[in-house]
Amino acid sequence: MSRLVIRQRADRDIDEQLVYLARQSPVVAERFLDSVDRTFQILASSPERGFAWSPDGIRVWPVREFQNWLIFYRPLEDGIEIIRLLHGARDVARQLEEEI
Image: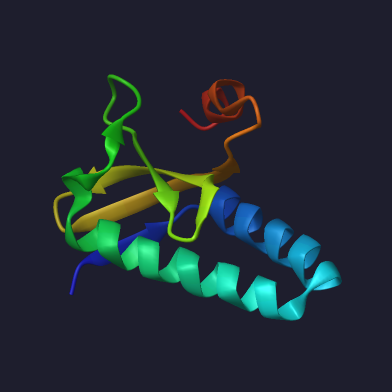
């Protein structure tokens, strides 16, 4: 099984979105979390699948079924490191600057 490392800030990104969605629809919040988990597993098993985002190895891939949400990650020798999970409408470049 491939290793999956989730940075603390990425974990907060997920929690914040879950709280927001759960206020509107617990069913959608659960579906979002399932989609995030499935996408993480897909990326961990084939890290090169995502698109190159930066010269330092960060890649990006959308969350299944929630295409506006983007996973920013770095491939590892045995999996991936999740850096952030951001909505595509945000200033993702500025948000990622803080993490790099």
